[in-house]
Image (tube, rainbow, N blue to C red; front, side, top):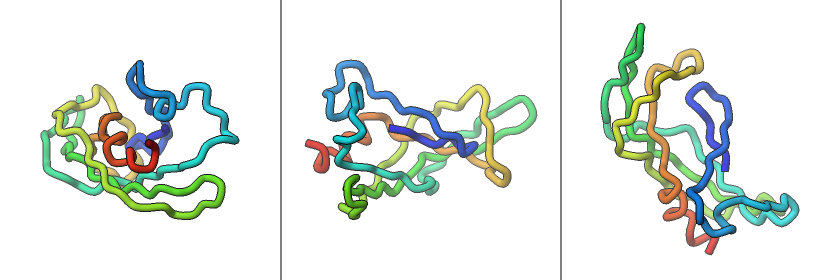
Length: 122
């Protein structure tokens, strides 16, 4: 899985060790991928805390994400789901933001992705 930082840059999202192969992506053969799940930009959930940095502070909200699931081979839309970011008040030590972005959002834990996407994967 890949996520997008608040800056717009992509990053890999790794599952915990011991995660079943259909969730882990280990030994992934791109020709055998059956599903693609895409998250929209987050909506603001509940306010969690103010994250204080050297020269500024940003409000941290619990992210609420729309997830669209597609069949990889055809691009056919299979469904929409919603997943919520972590409720933990965990501020990053540093952050890069796109111009105009003035808040942060928590991201879902791997288990949250599994919970909402399980019906497509298992």
